[in-house]
Length: 598
Image (cartoon, rainbow, N blue to C red; front, side, top):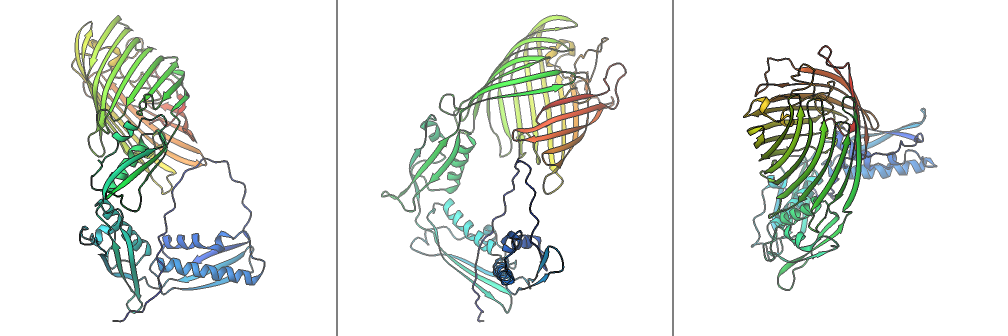
C-alpha cells in the first residue's frame, strides 16, 4: 500500500490557565466593527481553538479599510483554521464564508465542514544511537497516553514523545533527544501512521550540587532537603521532589534547578540550584464582631526563618470582650528527618464567659509528619494550669495531656475553598489534678466538604459536621474549660455563645460530655466579588458520653454576604433560631469576620 503523504504540522495547544483576579471594574468596551460566527463545528473544544486562533475575532473592533483587506484577513484565518483542524485530526475539511451587509454591525459567518476525523492506526517508538541497547525498553502505548483507533490529534502525538522522554529521565537518561518523527496521513482509509526515533543518551549519575543565591538561609539546611546523593543514578522525579520541597518551604520566591546538556569530565551530571529568598518577617491584624461575644481584634508578628533553617515563630495577641490571650507558636520543619516538623506552643489566656471564668497557661510540644499520601499525623504532650471560677466556686486545674491528631485536607484554598474536603480526628487523654486526681479522654471527629455545582465554580455547596465525646469522669469532675459547648459565630449561628446545651437555673451553660454540630451553606457568587450565602446550622450538647439523638437539635437558618478580597472573604452573617427556647434565645444574631464560617 502506498500512502499519500501529507505535510503535517504537529503542535500542542496548551489549555488556558484558570485564574481568579481581583481588579477594578473594566471600562466599557467599544462596539465591534463586525461580528464573527463559526458554524459547522460540533466539538466545543475544537471550536474554542478555532476562535482563539482567529484574527477576525481578535481584530473585530477594527475593520480593515477596504473590502480587499477584509478578504485578506479572511484568507489568513482560513490557513490558521486548516492548521488547527489538521492538528485535531481533520484532514478533509472545507471552509467557506458569507458576509451580511444588511445588518449593523456587519455579520461574518465562517462555515466549516470538518469532514471525517482521521484515526491513529500505528505508532512505533524506537531507541537509536550508541546507548539504545543499555536503555530500558520503550514503554507501551497506554503509558504514553495513546490508544490506537482514536482521533489522530497532534497534541496526543507530541504528548507521547514528552512522556517517553520523561520516562527516560526518570530512568537515568536525562540527556535523551528526539531524533526523528515521521507522520504520514493516508487519505484512502483516513488514517495516520507515526514513527518516532529517540536517542536515549548515556546512563547518567548525579554529580556535584551547587547552591546559589542564599543570603540568610543556611546552606546545610537546603542540602538536607536533597533527596539524592552524589553518584546516585539520575532520576528526574527526585529533582522534581527537591524543587517541590524548596517551593513549599515558603522562604524562596524563585527556585531554579538547572543542569548542563553534557556530562562532566568524571562522567556525572552536575546540578545547580539558584534561589531568591523572600521576605521573612511580616505583621498582620484582624478583627471580628459577633453579637453575643462583642468585638475582638488580633495582631501578629511572624518570622519565617528565625535561625536560618526555615524555623517559623509567630506571636499573636488577641483582645476581645470574652477572651484575652497571647500565643507564641514555633515550628521547626524537617526536624530529624525530611517532612517531620517539631511544633511548640506557649499560651497565656484569660476569658470570662457565662459558663466559667479562666486564667491559665498552656504549653504544647508535638511531632508532625505525613503518615500516608493524603493523611498527616501529629503526636505530642501538653502541660496546662488553669484557675477556674464557676457556680461551684474557684478551683485550680493542672493537667498533662498526650494529644494525637490525624488531618486530611484536599481543598484548593485555605480561606475560601471551592472544592475538596477536610477531615480531622483528635484524641487527648488527660491526667492531673482537679480537686482530686482526674483522668479523662477528650476526642472529636469533624469534617467539611466543598463541591462546585458549575464549571466556573461560582456556586459552591459547603457542608460541615462535628461530633465529640468525653469519657472517664462525671461532668462535675471535669474542669469547666474541657467540657463541650456550642453556639456562636464559629459553631451554631443564631444562638448565643456557648448557650446551646444544658443550662443551670440562671440559664448559664453547664457544658456537656458530648457534642453534635452540622452546617450547610450554598455560596453563590452573584456579582463580581460579592456572594450571597444562605445557610442552615444545627446541633446540641449532651450530658451523656455520646450524643443522644432522641433529643431535639437546635436549628438556625440565615443569610450571609461575602466580599472577596485578596486576603480572603469578608463575612457578614445574620442567623435566626428556628426552635428557640422561651426567655433564653434572642430573635437573631449577626456576625462580621474575615474568612468563611468553615
